[in-house]
Length: 408
Image 1 (cartoon, rainbow, N blue to C red):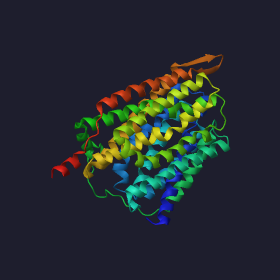
Image 2: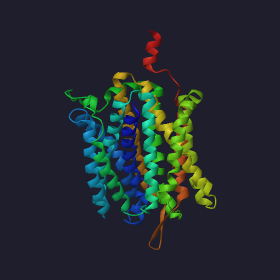
Image 3: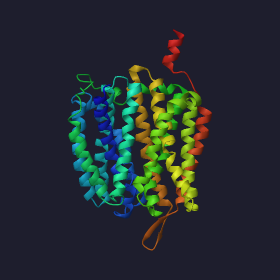
């Protein structure tokens, strides 16, 4: 891959993640303080990304893969997304805010898939080049967090307007990207292909089935982090919350680079177990910090393990699926993994996080306060139970395709 192509693809990924980070991290603070939405409504709002992750594969399968060049469709999605984000910044009622955010999240997650499609089409060595390009997503996330804090947008509608401006720039820039033809042009549309049913046969293997089920379940406690961490810090009078949370993305880059080194030592099972344990430790640190707030290192350490939490679960998970599935069903298998994690798991998790937050809230006059130690302990218990179940049920196995090759 030439340096120019690397720069063009990296800029695309940077801008795409910049848009998301502008609003996602601090939306809970804005909805709670400015719009006075309930804890359950905040959870539902964060669940829109999960809904988008479940709906967008059908859109990609029907439209993007058959009728439009990927870069043109990415441009259209971001340009329309810019208009939706600006509209969202003006909405005051949850009854309208929620469905509009679902429409936007679906368009964004469709673009999420397209950035991978465009990158994989143009890199010369996917195994080597793809992770390097994707690293720019973390850089974009960090940059948006720093700007969000510098402009003091963490609790205002300005976060959505900044995202709208970034989406507009991304939409225009996408028109300059190299041509990426629709890969499924002229192919018949099969419900079996769209639903990824071919990948379900992998569930016959106990280890793969355990991996998929546990991947779904770990997304339930991790949703508590994305739903509440911004508002948690704001309520405890931390300033520049968005910029402080970028510590997690710096950690993300570090652990992503460490993953290839640690994998031969810890094996797939070890990496995934460390990732699950990291979520339990993170939430436990948040609960302890709330009880003794003079120990800020607990909070920052909990944020700093984000790379271990994310990369050891999601990136390792995608690598595991890629290795396990044969070439003919690899796309369907990755779609299944995305559906159960970013889709179904995150939807259940954000919904439950909202309910738990609402349950452990209380009124002092007109002000709503929260028992944060109790809120954080709920995902601690879930992660610990999941750690034990995964340790018992999952075994490092040889993928079916490699077994067949060895037998031949």
